[in-house]
Image 1 (cartoon, rainbow, N blue to C red):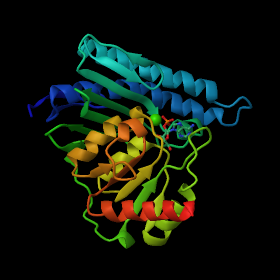
Image 2 (cartoon, protein in one colour; image 1 turned 45 degrees about the vertical axis):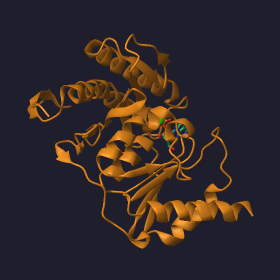
Image 3 (cartoon, protein in one colour; image 1 turned 180 degrees about the horizontal axis):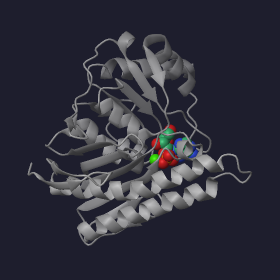
Image 4 (cartoon, rainbow, N blue to C red; image 1 turned 180 degrees about the vertical axis):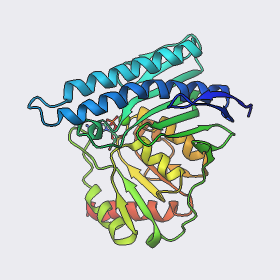
Amino acid sequence: MPNGRATDARGRTFLSRRSPLVTVMANAAYKAARGLVRDFGEVEQLQVSRKGPADFVSSSDLKAEETLVEELHRARPNFGFLLEEGGTVKGTDSSNRWIIDPLDGTTNFLHGVPHFAISIGLERDGKMFAGVVYDPLRDEIFTAETGNGAYLNAKRLRVSARAQMSDALIATGMPFKGRASHPEYPAMIEAVTDSAAGIRRFGSAALDLCYVAAGRYDGFWEFSLSPWDIAAGLIILREAGAMVSGIEGDDCMMESGDILATNGRLHEDLRHLLAEAAKTSRN
Ligand code: 2AM
Ligand code: CA
């Protein structure tokens, strides 16, 4: 990977091992994050106002998306877009498409909970090729490009080595209002609670996936996510040596939005645990 000059979120210039492509993605994320961080400070104040911060948050989200589109379009004018807020924008280059969530963890952001991220994936010929997930409050940037490994800031990422479910920390996302209902979900929570060391639900799927890649979590599952929630995370996971599948072990995460990601060693155990719980809840 060539070395180049890059600028981090605080405007510091440093010598980067990031490829030109990942540098472009990271710089777009840093730029959009400045507005989000400023607005997050406002949101914390708005909690006590009667109207609440909802409108303010949706405009912050839109502004972040505009910045990302502007920056990425300038760097790669022919690529298309799939945007959480703006839908699909066709590019003249039909093989490359950015898949973007400008604010993953919106509910956290809205409530002043400091856990959210920007997620930028690049799909090439129908497969995820590169990804950047940036948590601006911790200044943690997760990056990956096919064949070049996954990184957290400048550090190479690797999934955890835990092989026992009883030692494992498992994350999930709970079904919420308005999303397809999953009657088997409570039984799954119960089964994992009984078997694992602990369960976490932090509310940003993009960061949950990166935490599996970083070995912080040993596994993660969630239903009905959107492509922009998982696009960047998928390539970061793969490059960190994770195993990723649908919850039933299939391979259609981008279509179904159902995802199971683990350190590999625990994949079959967790898949089996979830499948058995689902079966019991149907009987
Ligand atoms: P979002 O913050 O971009 O909406 C949490 O379970 C995951 O589901 C997050 O990645 C979140 O992404 C996504 N999600 C989509 N719609 C949601 C909603 N109405 N409430 C909570 N999370 C939602
Ligand atoms: Ca999202």
